[in-house]
Amino acid sequence: MTRLAFDDVACLRGGRVLFEGLGFALAPGEAALVTGPNGVGKSSLVRIAAGLLRPAAGEVTREGAVALLGEAHALDPEWSLRHALGYWIGDRTATALAALGLAHLAEVPVRVLSTGQRRRAGLARVVGSNAAIWLLDEPANGLDDDGVALLERLIAAHRGAGGIAVVATHTTVALPGAQPVRLG
Amino acid sequence: MRFGAIVARDLRRAWSGGGAWWPVAFFLLVACLFPFAAGPDAALLARIGGGVIWAAALLAALLPVERLVGPDVEAGVIDQYAVRGTPLALVAFAKIVAHWLGFAPPLMLAAVVAGGLFDLSAATLARVEWGLLIGTPGLAALAVATAALVAGLRGGGAVAGLVMLPLAIPLLIFGAGSLDGGAGAVKLLAAVSLLLTAGAPWIAAAAIRVGMD
Image (cartoon, rainbow over all chains, first blue to last red; front, side, top):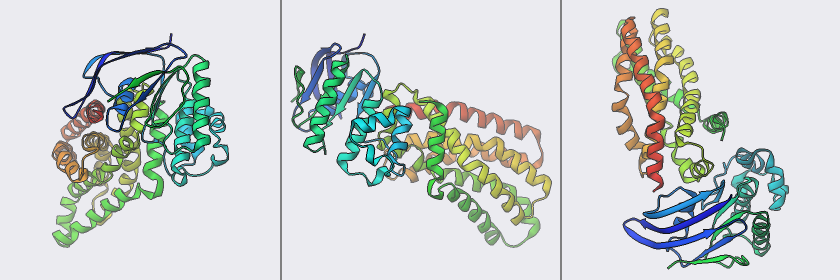
């Protein structure tokens, strides 16, 4: 059973409390929309959810595989997009590239891709990871309007298939029925 | 992630752009400088040659230390391993294997050339190569652990030298000591190398984990 729950979680960074007493629970098909101004701990919340950061207090329950879209794209710049993505998602690369509208860039080296194209490539890895829990940190950064619409469709499809999504953003990403998590 | 895939990626990155030849070129350069510094006395050079090769190997192993872990932390590659549940110690061990494959075989070839420069006897050269084969895994392990410790530090390269070189002294002592043909030194060299290779992945993983916070 896929599940992601925060129970009374606090986050301490550099001796400063970013948030405390944070709690929410996500069942299959549900999503959380984390919003707030810069520096309130949206990225830290995502990293805590991913298990990369230990919460200063509280408990995080995570049941199911995790796919993370972080700040850094984690694709080797000198490799072709197909090869760089293939390192992470293997034979699901072609499908994931097509889903993000990147199929025509498959043979282009990652270093010449634009910011938006790299963002899409990062999302392709999330899509191709087959993970039930999507953790997306500023997924709309650098995306054009079509890209944001595509992102919203992909998240909706993922939720429709019983997946969970946590989206941290300072822009507008439409997530119908998502639990709002407002920081700061 | 599969272990073999991580090794292959790291090795490919090390070799891309001729990166693997830098330690070898550096090694040969250090070996070439010694005869200039110590003078053209063939007997003296033959006596110190093996030790010089060992000191040069140590420095060559240290050379790519900033490229071993730091860039992967910055690019988010380590984060991606972690969310996939790949143990960081396994990642570190894969990096050790890749670093060893990247620098040790070319270095052992270059040592033949260096042996010629110092006019080492065939028996001494064989002992140097044998010692390098046993000792270089320890050097690679030490380099990866150091790389993990200094990842994200400004001026990490200089700090890496200060951290790694003292810890490599046992390898140097027993490596150079094995040149006299003493079996004891070879065994101790193997013991130190094994200890470093077995311990470094855990140290590197802990260092990377702390760096994430």
